[in-house]
Image (cartoon, rainbow, N blue to C red; front, top):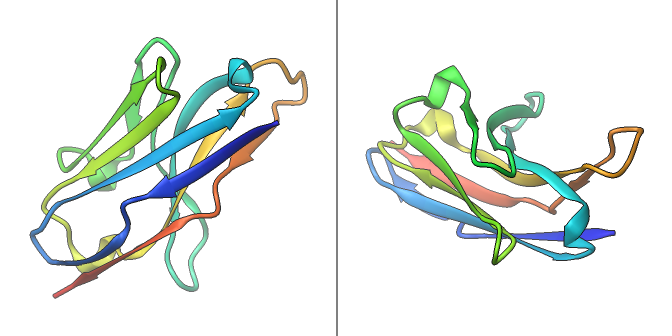
Amino acid sequence: QVQLVESGGGFVQAGGSLRLSCAASGSVFRIGDMGWFRQAPGELRELVASITSDGTTHITDSVKGRFTISRDNAKNTVSLQMTNLTPEDTAAYYCYASDRLDIRGAYYWGKGTPLTVSS
């Protein structure tokens, strides 16, 4: 099993920046891709950004140019640098990691960290 713990959420004014971090522990050798989803109140959870173990990234269009994802394989961490935040970015942000050894394609999830962007 892999445990994921997010940190860095909070309150920020529109136009501000914030960095989210996620630390993995446990059977980290199982981790493949990592990334971030978010879920706003009343909305479905959506993918924000992902990064493979070799550093290939994907950023969803709505945050492209504002958010950057990075990963430190030695420290088993993934981070999301967010800039030029808007109220539409308000959501709970969840870190995830894929299990590269599970043929069913299992994922691990953190408990989430909240972000509120005020206008």
